[in-house]
Structures are given as C-alpha cells and as structure tokens.
Amino acid sequence: MSTTYQLLAIGPVPAELVGSAWGPFVVTATTFQEANGVLHQQPFDAVLMTLDEDELQELPLWPALSHAVLDAAVLVVTPQVSPLVAMRLLQAGVQDVLSPNEQETLPRRVRLGIERKQLDRAARKAHATDLATGLPNHSQLLEHMTHLLALREREPAPMALVVLRIEGLATAASRLGPESANVLRRKVAVRLRANLRASDVVASVGHDVFAVLLAWVDAPGDVSGVVNKLVQTLQRPFTMAGGDMAVAVSAGVGHYPEHGKDAGALMRRAMGQATSSAAVGRAGFANRVERGPAAAANDEDPPGE
Image (cartoon, rainbow, N blue to C red):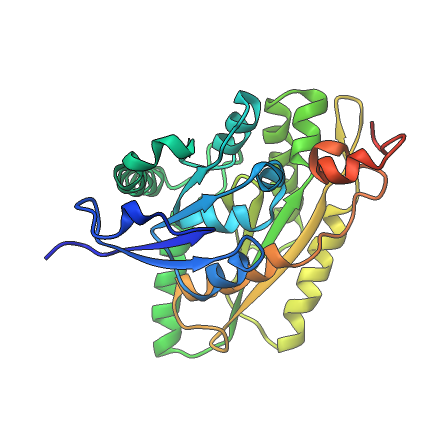
C-alpha cells in the first residue's frame, strides 16, 4: 500500500496534484493569512505556496515560515523571483522555488522535496547536534522528549516546552556578513543556557528558533516566570564586531499534559504560539531587511541604518 502524503496548499490547489502517480496527496487548502493556524493543528509532509510578488517579498519575514520548514518540505511557486530572494528562501529552509510554467513537473518536485526532507531529518538525527551552536537539534530534542514523556506516563509530573523565535539574525548578516548570524546564534545559546537549570534542555530547532525543555515544573506559574526571564535576558544587546546588536523574541509554550501527551503535539503548540505572537525588543535596531519593503518605503531615515 502506497504512502499518503499530507500537503498544505497556500493559495490555489494545482490540478496537477490530483491523481498524480507521485502521490497520492491529501491536500488541505488555506490562505497565507490563515496558514499558521492550520500548521498548528496537524503535521504536513509538504507545504506548497503559490504567491504573488508582494507576498513573495514578505515571505522571508513571515514568522510562520520557521514553523513550516521544521518538518515539511516547503515549495514556492511564484511568477518572478530574483536570485537574492531565492537564496534567502533556501537559507531559511525552503526546498524549491518554481515558476508557473513548471507546474506540470510539480507533483514530482513535491514528492522529491518530501524525500529530501526525510533524508535531511535522518542525517540530522544521526549527528544529533546543530553544528553552528553545538546544541541538540530538532530530532535529538524530539527523541529526548519522547523518552521523557514515556517516563511521565509511569510517573506523572507536569513539564513544559518553551519555543523562542529570534528576530535580528538578518540584520546581523546584512551588516556584518553571513557568518555573523551564526555567531549571534551562538551568543544567544550561551545566554539561554546560563539562565536555566542544569536539568533543563536547550535545543536549536531551526535557523531562528530555539527550544527549552523544562523537564519538571513545580507550579504552573513557574513556566511564565522562566519565559519572562529568558525573554528579558535576550533583550540586552549583544556585542558584535565592537558594536551592539539586539534581537527581539517571541515565545510559545506547550504544557504537558494539558496541551498534548506526545512530543509532536507539544512542539506544534509551542511553535504555533511563538510564530503567531508579536516579538518584543530591538527598539531602534530593526532595519528594512526585517521590517519589509512596505514599512521601509514609508521611512525617510530607517532606524538602525
């Protein structure tokens, strides 16, 4: 029996996917504005985005992109894309960028994207760590959570997963070069680790996303206290190349057992909340790269430029 692939289509659903030998695909259709909520509800093997020029320009800044690329193969169909924007999308985790005249090859591209994503996930699981930060990666975190949750079934106790989405990496890269984003990620990792218990696990689960596993929670209010402390400590500027560089942070939390009893459910809950919440911090530091072309067009003298 062939595998059925769950596909989220943002925009029109291409007819080429229906009945394709590269499937079968079960397609859920949504809009660009509603996609984050749908990603929060269930996992997908692939996300296909059909975007106009304005939506394409906003995509690298779209908070839910971090959520989409975490487990799914993300493909973008758009009438026109510059090499610079395409490279930014690939660096953010997008698998492929296609033009509308390539639609007839779409089912094959989607299926191959899914297969590449699965191979990438297996490779990351084998290496267990994020090379840029030295932290456990997404696969390692999920594996650790699965073992801990099995223990919690036998010895019930509350626990929580905190997801922190970081804004400011694009500013570092545009000002100081591409590798500076990884330097900033390492500094963020060190600061997070310094403000947690030895038993808590910090992981890098995406280019701009960190997760903190609180293995036990004494009281429900303790989690919000930890989140506030982490957000506040990350709002202090980092020293980069002799100057200050700031990040903004948005946070989400998945509580066990209230929000789920498996690692995937807790991750989707926390990630969905983090990517739909407004980031705090970076007053005076944001540049037009991260604020987007629409906001930058209204600025006579953008802050941080």
